[in-house]
Amino acid sequence: MDLIINLNKPKGITSHQATTEVKKIFKAKKAGHAGTLDPSATGVLLVCLNKATRLASYFSSLGKEYKAVMKLGETTDTQDADGTVICKKDKIEVDAHLIKNTLRFFEGEILQKPPIFSALKYKGKPLYKYAKRGIEITIEPRKIFIRHIELLNIDIPFVGFRVICSKGTYVRTLCNDIGEKLGVGAHLFELERTAIGQFSVSDSLSIEKLKSIDTEHLPQTGIYSMDSALSWMPEMKINESLIRVVKNGNPLEISKCHGFSDDLKTAAGIKIKSPDGEFLALGSFSAEKNAVKMDIVFIA
Image 1 (cartoon, rainbow, N blue to C red):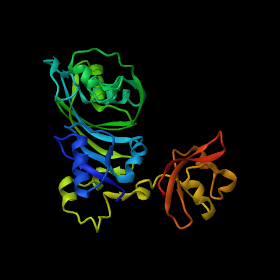
Image 2 (cartoon, one colour):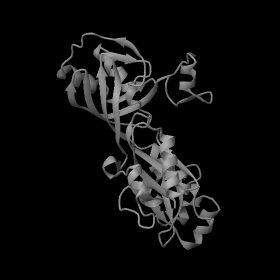
Image 3 (cartoon, rainbow, N blue to C red):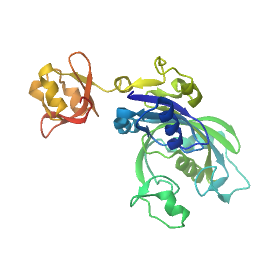
Image 4 (cartoon, rainbow, N blue to C red):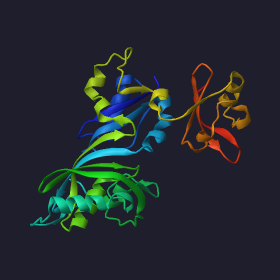
């Protein structure tokens, strides 16, 4: 079964461990996830099985939504509650107006410096391995986009907020930077990923629920075929005569693609289908070749 599972990852296990659990349940040969969640975080983790593992990069590039709780007055070395407190403020003199304005300051395109305690790689090794050995690494800030951030509740020293952001955003770094802007310091206390693209936590399934599912009769939500999981992606049906071209991984000349339209030129991906709707491959427009090149071919 080539499936995408919208898993509600529980707290206390790594994304790799959660993926392994799903792999066992479905007796899959291959499994991978699209977008790591820290062990202390919960929420949407997309697990791809068998051929669907080849789609992981398409899902990980989608926008993310989180609900977070940050603790003001304490800065930690890992920027979250699992780290060691390295700075503490006895007085936290902030109000709702100041917090709201500070959150708004981070909306839009900003530069963010990834945390040293992260799985981001430097010279082939995760940054956290350097951090644990006390090796200082110069990390260049990266552009991220905060589409929306809103205050949910305040119970000093705790502040809850919701954020919709681009791929590559570290919410714990966002908390750290918000605390710095407020002048009191802060770290991420709790985190739930509530959505990846159109995949919502309200449609997600727990590991316990997956264990009780009859794999012959899959539920209507939470488990998706490769085609349905990419419902947001445009598609193009080709003539029977072009199936062999796709099968061989060769580009499709635009002049021969009767279903091609100009909007496909800017699409992040194009689902290539047979006349009867079989999902054959994923392609993208190549201006250089004036053709649709094959990125992933599924048909054997």
